[in-house]
Image (cartoon, rainbow over all chains, first blue to last red):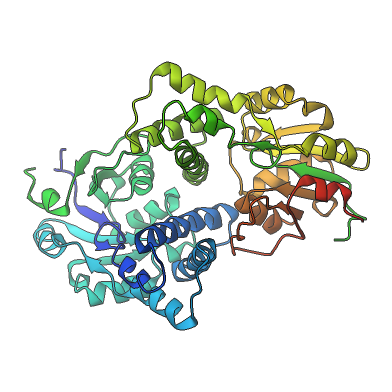
Length: 223
Length: 223
């Protein structure tokens, strides 16, 4: 990929920089199959962001996550106390960075202006980035909350263009979420897909410019 | 529910009038777990309708179904020949009405003007309704294709208002799909949820006016 024109990199947060699966450990307490429970919770959470955006009824990502949790516990027929519910939600404020992320970001920020562009609410992003000590690497932390619409609406990606004061062709967008890769590429960004699991790509649009397994590969790749 | 003001009923198609699960039989040929395969295919198909609507990149429901099939076969690591692929897609043109539907519609059409309002492409709807002999019950067959946006966009439900020439408070909308129930209720329709499986409702908005197990219960309920 010709990176000569790239001046800034915008990263997705959950699943890309930090491990959402870490929440599964908290699910151990309540669900016989915590991995399945967590996967359903996460899928429902994303589905609700799509639905609320389409209905024009935005609620922030914290509220969406609570509602998705409520649905998933009912779906699994689980009995969850208010305290357990709080602990499950709290897990979103204690995300865990993927092992390579801190080092890779240190390297990348020497050459590029870095941003986070996430569905997360401002509070979730701020808290998560502070606790993981990733905050210092980013010049911008951008939440969709500013426009009350979720990815993959093109207005979300436009928000990064506006905040970063760069042209869309000067921004590399990095995400591990296939729908986000498709949305960002459809918008016009250069896109890198962090495919940690070897998943297939959703065949909904143009392919990403670069596919790597870890952010490390992105930061050490020759130009 | 006070039905005195209801003059027309708009039905969702897939999962509401006709059984989408019938496609699973065709999946027997290719997948070790056809029910799981079919459920994933269906979930992906809906996800793609949400994503394409949010991206402003409409493709019709036939194409969306093909793309969801392509992704799901890769996800399951299955080897599918072009002939098998065609047969799987053809199953969408041979849906199977739920047992009570034909009788219930005969009864309802004596008192209300009936419509179908579906994500399905015009060809899919026409073919499916002709083959199941349900077509004769409907005064309108309305596809989202006219506005190139999928449910639960309010513009989809507005389409029924426009075509049926009724106020939104005069239309009862009937669907078995939770997201469709939420979308229609958020738009302002009276809504009946056909909850055939006892599933929980997505807690994203106001609740439906009526919840029944079959369309039969709707057609025989006292006013």
